[in-house]
Length: 168
Image 1 (cartoon, helix red, strand yellow):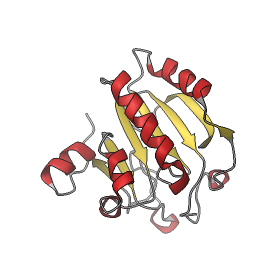
Image 2: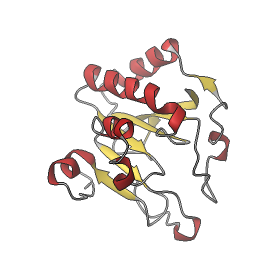
Image 3: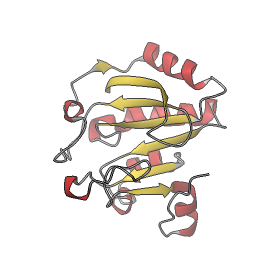
Image 4: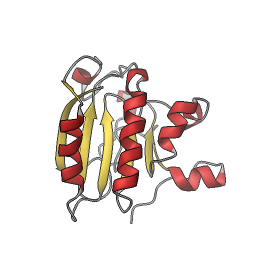
């Protein structure tokens, strides 16, 4: 798995002050994407143990609310095993922190893919759906176009209907 950068104090990609990992690899290739350089899974830097330790050091800070995975697409096929491992470790080490994940896949489609489902089951919030340039709305919190949804994953899995995330 490759990544392009790690934001250490980001307020745009989830609630609170967050560590954001920008992963490489995306098959959606949305028109007007703000990060087309992330589409190629081979772009960026190899995510290795040293980088993971650096990421975890940032997450240890009291003022950090959690981890956000974006890109690219964290649920891009070649990222899945590494993302699952990262989410597992983050959930164990930082139980009080939230995990947000951005993907071009729809929640309903993720339910049909066992590995993607395993990943999101360990996340708190999923921002789903491809970015649609004609539906762009910069006033929306945490998403770029009106078709995307900010989903409370845990409430949705319990209720078996989509529950949108409500800001605190």
